[in-house]
Image (cartoon, rainbow, N blue to C red):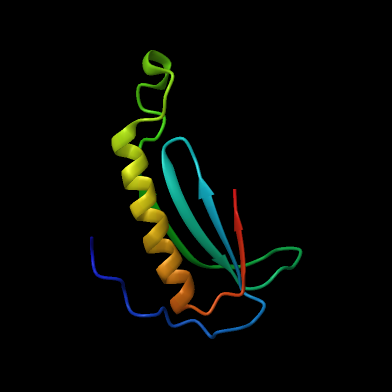
Length: 91
C-alpha cells in the first residue's frame, strides 16, 4: 500500500464534510468546505476497483475487487482522520 500523503493544506474546520462514494467501478472520497447551497470540494481522491467486473456472468461482485475496495476505504478513512473531519457520509 502506498504511503499516505501529508495532510493537505486545508484549514481544519469543524464544518468540513466528507463523502465516500462506493460505486460499481470505483471508490471516491470528496471533502467539501462545509454544507452550503454550493459546497466547494477541497479534496478529491478516487481508486478504481472494478467491483462489478464480470457481474453479469457471475452474479457476484468480483472478489479481488472487493479486496481492492476494502484497501481503498481503509486508506480514505486514514486521510479523513488526518484531516480532522467530523462529518462523514458513505453512499
